Amino acid sequence: VYVRSIEDRSQTKFEVVREGDEYKDHETGEVLGYEALFIGSGLLKRIGDPATLLLTATEQESVKGDRLLPVTEDVAIQNFQPKAPATNVNGAIISVLNGITQIGQHDVVVVDRGASDGLTVGDILQINHRGATIKDAVTPDPGDTVTLPDEKAGIMMIFRTFDRVSFGLVMHATRAIHVMDKVVSAK
Picture (cartoon, rainbow, N blue to C red):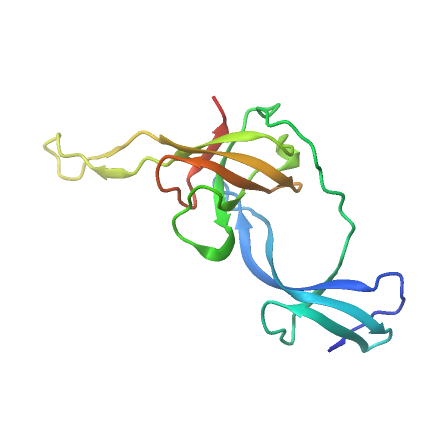
């Protein structure tokens, strides 16, 4: 494929990505970042404008407008201890990988709290199913509602943090978990 403006050979491995959904704070609605949908991988063959990139692996069709990210040599953390977060966490699940609607054990989720909120790899968070607001059948006013209490739904462990969002693995689930359910410091 041809790509725009790669003028040096200092980076030769790239990931092809496409902009996905916005990640928003569940309380303020502030945009925290954007999902990068993985399309494939490639090797730089020729520099220039346009440059030539050989696609070496793809999961989806690459289309005009896809972006390149240089492949970084992240060092995986091989040993860490699950622990309670150093700070009090009060956030929410804002996305789930692979676009499923009900989240269960071993699913990967995105939470709207990150390193700037004190989260680190290995932090354990409790997942609370958000209490629904329902019609109050006890009062005489048909417009009255009551909000049910949040109920513990599972436990997750943070395995990757960014400044304002983190990725976590649901380690245990006692009921279906959904996007917008709360995550709090484990008790």
